[in-house]
Image (cartoon, rainbow, N blue to C red; front, side, top):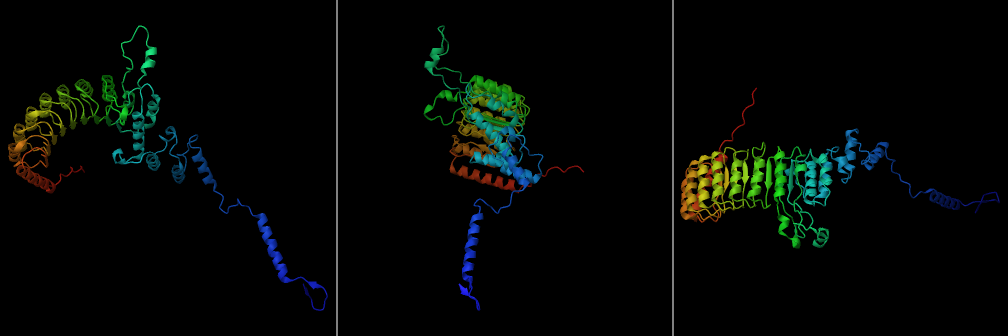
Length: 456
């Protein structure tokens, strides 16, 4: 306390008053402080509405009525797990479908899907359902209900697995057999696979169908029946393919397709309006099946035919050669890993002397030798269309190599000639390589044909 001059009344100390004021202010601040208070601005009403739309999109999918900038915000926030019944025909934004693809699959290359993320999603999603479909167990509606959602986006299907029905326990089946008996043995069940008929015919833009009837990663549960392509399966598939009028590429590989099944498939493909590529490689097709395919060559628009790794001998080769001699559409033929022999090889050579459209032929691993090389040397001298020949893994021999070199002397079009493991001799192989290099170099220097000018 200080005492004022001329007065006995004490005056409060200034320092003490200031300290009391500071303490009081601190107490007041502590009293009014709210730990949940935020200085952030309250969201705008537009933002609150967009959040509500995203959270309730399944029940009320509002998108088309929004402004473009608001649509963008909604699409960026939509979860990828929304029902396809909601998003399939409503959301066309590629960024959304890109998120759907990348979150589901580690490898995503859209170059094989027309650079479309939406097409990739629906094709791979449908393929995954077909690969896991178990006949008599899986509900067929899983596939049928998806058709209206994906039919406008599916152009290609690649199904490399078809599961058979579940095997019935012999003890349980024995309890169900009546006293009158049964013609079926215990544990025998129909092993027909999923019928693609209803699906394929409902996809109006389907252009490619790649199928393998078998089971992947079966491990210790391996049985030959898991890889059985039944006659009923073939009937179902033939009927489906026949009705698929826009189909351009059909591949049925590694499915144990024999002669009878080949004839059935060919009957359904005769005079097909769109088919340009057929791949039946790695099957059990023999001469009878090859004869059926020979009929198809000239009753279709086929440009590429692959019969690699089958059981075709000279009779089948002769049938194919006869068709090839009269054909004017086929550009590529693969007969690798068959059993043509020289009789079949000579037949193919005579066909190539008459054919003027084939550009590539693969006759590797067909037990060909010098007689085939003699006729093929004439082909090299006369044919001006072939650009690629493969005779690898045949016993052509040194004399056959000299014959091929002689025929190639005046050839200007052949740029690829595979003679690995053909035993043609180092000198012939080297000189043939030099000639091919000269042809490739000349082809690169040749002026490219210009498209015809549009009329004014």
